[in-house]
Amino acid sequence: MGVDLLVLAFERPAIDWHAFAPELVLLSVGSLVTLLDIVFLEKARPYTAVVAGLGLLATAVPLLTLALDGTDRVLFGGAYVVDEFALVMKVVFVLAGYVVILLSTNYVAEGDYWENEYYGLLLAAVMGMVMMASSRDLISLFVALELLSIPAYLMVAWRKSDLRSNEAGLKYYLMGVFASAVMLYGMSLLFGIAGSTLLSDINTAVVAGGASVSVVTLGIVFVVAGFGFKVSAVPFHTWAPDVYEGAPTPVTAFLSVASKAAGFVALLALVFVGFYGRPEVWEPLVWILAALSMTVGNLIALRQTNIVRLMAYSGVAQTGFMIAPLAVAGHSTAVGDQALSATVTYLVIYAAMNLGAFAVIISLARKTGSAEISSFAGAFRYAPALTVAMTVFMGSLAGIPPLGGWFAKFEVFRVLTTAGDPWGYALAVVAAVNAAVALYYYASILLRMWADDVPDGDVGAVPITPSLASALAICGVVTLLFGVVPQTVARFTHVSLLALGG
Amino acid sequence: MFLNQFLLLSAALFAIGVYGVLARRNGVLVLMSIELILNAVNINLVAFAAFGNSLAGEVFTLFVIAIAAAEVGVGLAMVLLLYRNARNIDLSRIDLMRG
Image (cartoon, rainbow over all chains, first blue to last red; front, side, top):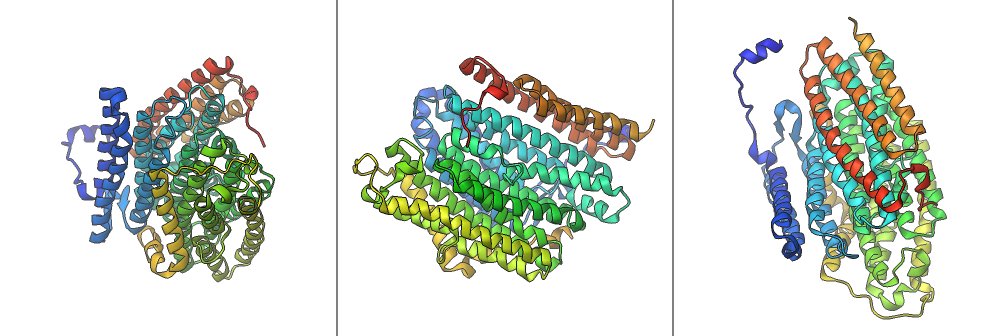
């Protein structure tokens, strides 16, 4: 076979440039930012953030034209697919990236750190996420994952002379690389079974049942575990609190939203396109991950005094909610489609509310100089607008109507109960108990901000920069839209993968 | 030659690598253990590709090797950074954050 290949003339496969345009725009803007940094050094400083932000907005243009066009595009023999699901997630990633740039402007440079490269890295990571949304092949999933992860490791360790940032970076790096190595081992086993790296071929092979059950199980478990790390599901969550605390806060916001969403996108593609025919392997696994993440995340969050660590554990608990619909997704194709829609809807709402909460934390921590919850006491006295915003985001995270979070939780409960499976009902009960527990700690933060006295008595106003204000506005509007007119907005997040992978 | 021989070799390498990651406390040794796991992956991929008559495995291996090189570059830079600031790369001694 090898010899034949040499004889054959190389023929370039047809490339659909339109389908690939968002990635190309990100690539060229990312390179442009890096070039600006190298050529103009300090002089480029005022412009890099602007160029990166405009670049992300420009990426939205081809995304929009692709959405208007509406046809599913299949590239590279099925390894790369631009469909509704991919487009929705790409828009989320690009918007989340834009909000992170708004949050980062000036912030990452504080303490005399070089700011310019940061935006190049951020754009590379966003490109990784955008690619992840389209990947339907082991190789492209792996490359997208690493394109996202490697810049993220560097961004976590951004404060080079701060030991906490170094520690966070190294921990994230070692655990991340370990997780992706284990995941790769699982991928190699799956490749062995299927003889192909395409997820649809893997589905055919795992359904056929010719391969040994233990190899299929091992492969699926390892791959799910690798992405379980990325989405910080218990028991793969141990990195999250330390990394969130040590990293610069905008990077934490990025990790907790964008990189988690990217992990979910990969998990969804794998489960729905790659493993859908073998639910008896992944359903129990997902059930355990979901129940553990919700329970452990919430219980540990209850006793946190640092708000960033609290957000880390709350993020772990939210992961449990997002992954829960997958535990019944194999029941039937209809339930599978609903489960996918529920998870995607939750991801979109979660991205908005969590980024918003981080925007408030960043603004307030500027004044208080601390991330301890006690230092935020009495924030209503000096920052009423921020306190109201925090109420919206925290209320949404807790799932109080009419904020976006309730609709996200509603969708999850609906899927868990419509499947008519005892395990689904059991998980719904676990989720309901956890939603109540979570309400307690979200509400106690709000109570302190509204009712307590300011600890140091300083009630000088908190300056809100225009970029932070726009970040808050974007997140607030999305959170409220999903809560007030859910059916209108949810049309965009009700997507399907099964028709394609089936 | 049987496929099993390669798979056993790679499983052994994988196990050694996982043991190293969990048991070693030195940053560089942990990195080396991770490399062992990645090499186990490569052996698996190439063996499957050779016995299954598919080129995808070899291509995947090339990607793994290239990306692992980039990863190690970042990892060593980070270990070096930590050494500069803390004068030590013992992972059990860097625990500023807990809770």
